[in-house]
Amino acid sequence: MGRDVIVACDFSSMEDTLSFLGKFTGRKPFVKIGMELYYAEGPAVVRELKARGHKIFLDLKLHDIPNTVKKAMAVLSRLDVDICNLHAAGTTAMMKAALEGLTRPDGSRPLLIAVTQLTSTDQEAMERDLLIKEPIKDVVMHYAKTAKAAGLDGVVCSPLEAEAVHGACGREFLTVTPGVRFSDGDVGDQKRVMTPAEAKRIGSDYIVVGRPITAADDPVAAYERCVREFVD
Ligand code: C5P
Image 1 (cartoon, protein in one colour):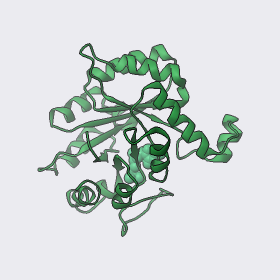
Image 2: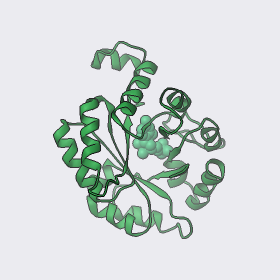
Image 3: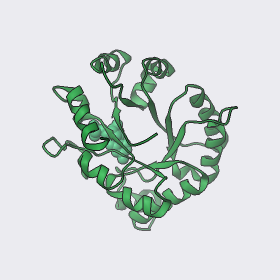
Image 4: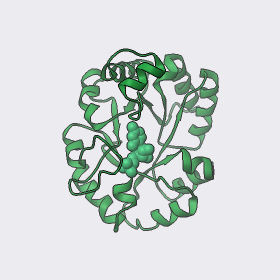
């Protein structure tokens, strides 16, 4: 899979999601299904969007003991999602177990990427609540290298970290980056943002874009603008 725009379908029901995606009559966007939609609608929403021709990043961020994650990943793999994810903090053993669970009898599997430190965690919270005293930038890079060593395909990271991740883990190691905004658009609650064109320049592999597309007056035009800036 090459560079692509992933639309974050942060809706609370299948109905709202289908009504939004129904506007896309041409190119079918790669979509991200997160916890809210998945917990509301379950596997049916994944099957429905797959049947409609969408590629799917199932963003459930698994984090549990290796055996539990392995079995859960086997279920997600049978749903035929394209990308799924977990927390690198679950350790190498959990990441390796996840890969085993994901791998189908024919050897194929969805891509598996890791969340490093959530962008909502800052240095102070990490030191106080997690007792991790290293600079957060070093922690993110360490988690990325650990994910790569465990055999994962990439990480979710800020576009501002994508170049450093590629430097440390290689060009083929995928960087999936949220926090994307148009140069003339609302930033909203995102703190550190980049335009699709900048994300392309720094070598991001996939951008995850939510409100700049879902809340646009013309979502299809906003999506096509992202594709023009980032993919073409
Ligand atoms: O609407 P917006 O473009 O900000 O949506 C970004 C999407 O990426 C949301 O689904 C959000 O939960 C997700 N995300 C993020 N920052 C992270 C990880 C995930 O914004 N560090």
